[in-house]
Length: 176
Image 1: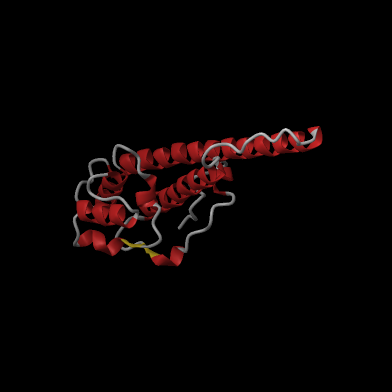
Image 2: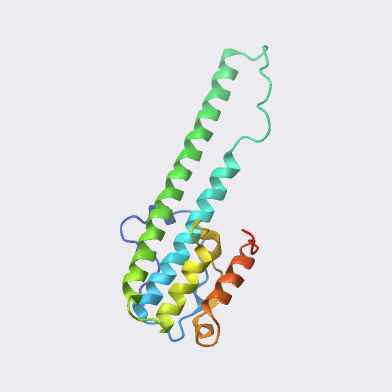
């Protein structure tokens, strides 16, 4: 089995700094190797999207800006301006990494679609259906940023039910 990331190729900079997932908590079950590799890469990329979004948001200014103190020396003002610019640059870089992870995740979804074409009812197709339903048209990546999954559940659980559980675990309700 390929390691998640090998499917992603040279654009792995989106994964640098993203906490690794415990792959032992994912069980392939009846899903084919190619589909499982794409799925695991997608899970990793969804974690990256969530990580970079949360990291960028943590750098966003909170509330109104601090008042300007006229007693600051020019050196102190320059230092504050430098720190503000550095924070803005870091936030922009994190947003770029988030966008790159989104693009890569969509590429994984496209590959999964091609792999499952005309294979309705198979475990691969059912996994893809669960993923698509969970992410939805609003691309809620947090729903597939899973911590664990046993693909054996695909044999006796409807993909919609699996997607609903993933959505609830990600903090979304049926109205989201």
